[in-house]
Amino acid sequence: MKKITIAIDGYSSTGKSTIAKQLAKALGYVYVDTGAMYRAVTLYAIRKGFVSETSEHFTKLIAALPSVNLKFVYNEELGFSEMFLNDENVEKEIRTLAVSKLVSKVAAVKEVRTKLVEMQKEMGKEKGVVMDGRDIGSVVFPDAEFKVFMTASPETRAHRRYKELLDKGESVTYEDVLLNVRSRDYIDSNRKESPLIIAKDAIEFDNSDMGLIEQFERMHNYALRIIKG
Ligand code: DC
Image (cartoon, rainbow, N blue to C red; front, top):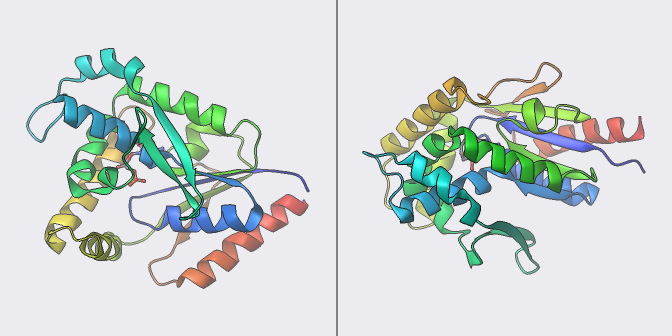
């Protein structure tokens, strides 16, 4: 069967990674979470003191980029890949609200995007990949055969994210999470470098009121139709 590239873009906490993982599993494709890559660079920048809520030293971050080594390592037990930053498993740390609060700033840095987009193109060059992010259908794989743009209301997304963070034992308020969702939407959509846009040939998918099973079945059918041509 022919292999295609599946690009899943959209706002934060729209469930992109859930659907992308399910699709990759069903099709036997590789799943790449590009948000994890931007989060890992952000964690690096936080640790080095290159970014905080009140300061930005992006010239230093750019100079240090060659020593930021990222890789995904497949965890057989969990059934998905984990993010490694300079050989350290940072999968848990990159999902904290502390990183979420600063990641949009770091993801707006041109040199960071150039480095990560290049890695993403390399990872998907054989096709048979489901990649999720913000600019996959517009910049990384403009020729992807199947492009999806996921949306849901900010409140629905904040509720999902709030629940996830509570389940992980983080002490956060719903208001703080909603604020973060709105502020990331704003920065991601208004930045100069590859802003979050709906690629013109993407299908828009609002899952505010849709269950996971229905969502998966619809996307899977779409993908199969394209694959079978
Ligand atoms: O998908 P996520 O919430 O884990 O992504 C984290 C941040 O990274 C998000 O606020 C925007 C940025 N991002 C990006 O700019 N481009 C991508 N391809 C993926 C993520």
